Image (tube, rainbow, N blue to C red; front, side, top):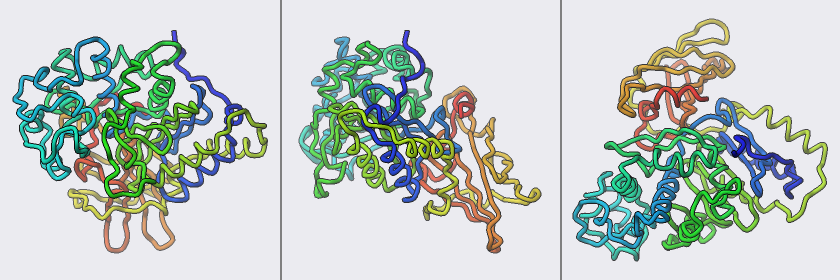
Length: 457
């Protein structure tokens, strides 16, 4: 039976100077890239694990399009079982018209032939995807296509009668030690393109398995042939961008090729970076629109690895231990930019004084106590329906401070996501803005989760 804990080692024992980890922390914090959690591993050993308050290493947070890779793995497992042929037309598995002959592989590689403009107009509906005449010949044009990933989820459920979550639990999650996880549903099936909630250790575990050709704890968990196909750059993503950008190096089966190896990639900087040739895996969660800068900082760390063990520098090791203990996103509060997108229900919020260094934040979902350290609250019975069982909840963490100019600054974080609201009260009133706007709507309601997810942070 596999231990729940991944083996740990010092960075130097696997060729990584502690100074390189310190530099990465500085790069992320001082550039305002808003890091939330980080794991660095090599050959299955964790060399660094940390989380910036109020996130923790156990926070199950929305990983956006990292979900797509798990969808592809589900298809790979069905292929290894002989239940699906990725070269077959989609209508073999979905009872829908398929006049343009789209195959499962076209969906996996986002080579359906639709243009980016067409994809923007497509609903999350497999029938609409299949019947919309593509602007290009299928297999000859890449456009990032979340409806294609949703169709893959529909295929997996049609074949097995099970959700992606149920399918992966015994075949992938349990063997990797990931445990029970929630995947947001849409029209009765797991989204596939987004919606999966994972902690930073989960991202490290999937990366470690992929780095070792699908083997984890001595067991072949992910089919080796699937990984080889999935990491092949089936789609040309070069476009007109510079070849130094990590989104121009090719796309496989719901995976991006990278400057080093390949990666799982979600909006605002949710990553599992896998470099099989060196055994290095970097799992990361954060919130920025400057994701190439995040990757550049991580690649500098990856390039710092040596082939053999290094002597430990006691001073650097001590500094690193101190930094891990002090990781807090509040330290970067003056570097975080507020997005200009309006918050639709801003007029329904208020902030009142509740004593020195204490405030009461009134929101449409209930009151939240704020003080000069992080306070954590789960708001239950929130209007909405995220999974059909009436258990809608909102996990929040808040912290505030009175500023020298007489204003009050409050950060309201939703730890089950990458997102935070930045709230300022000054002489002109209350101002709300997202640091990174939730992808589907600029309202906090889009971040509702079941109660059992909200309480694990």
